[in-house]
Length: 250
Image (tube, rainbow, N blue to C red; front, top):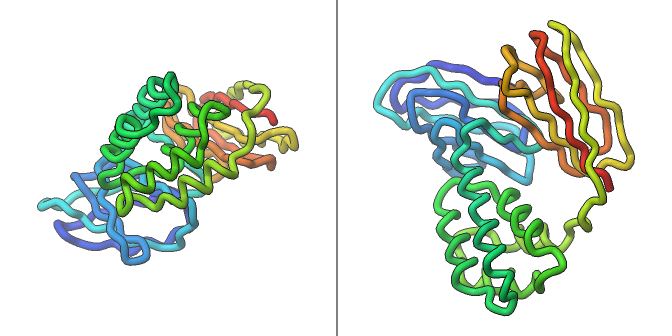
């Protein structure tokens, strides 16, 4: 869901919305979001992501100027075009790949890289998914999480990483890709698939309008992933645009 409001410097905005992410689409500068009494700071194109659902939060204009602010909220996981946070988190992969050449040495380089990335706003699911992608069947997961617990206590809830890694499904067997070309104003439903594990829908780069996927508006180049989801996904396009669909098959 998209939310827009004009805020004076320091002014607060109480938002009622159920979701797992808050994407900062545009605005005059840095904002502060407060969820359950805990503040988080976001710049434009950054995303706050939670494994738990929130029902309301507060946005504060942290700049010294009046401006118009636009945010997105919803369930699932949002990747925004130009999101610097995503680029940083993916940087873990190269560190992990390098260190897995010597799987018994899991200390300083991996832990230091994670610690550097966990400074303020981060996406815990991106970190854990990056780790499990690179180290499945290669090293002892428990050994890594115990090392992280020792090195970065107080920076992040290590239990979230441990539980995510320990309960993760085995790698999927294949991918199914497809494309939908809309007529202006057309609605379309991606059918349920019991063999699906995850599904990612990308709004094509050449799109001229907004495509709504599962109730979430996506601009060109933006995409959304629904994890462990086998149900239908309703879609609608304002213009004659395209979406690219990738399903991870169990």
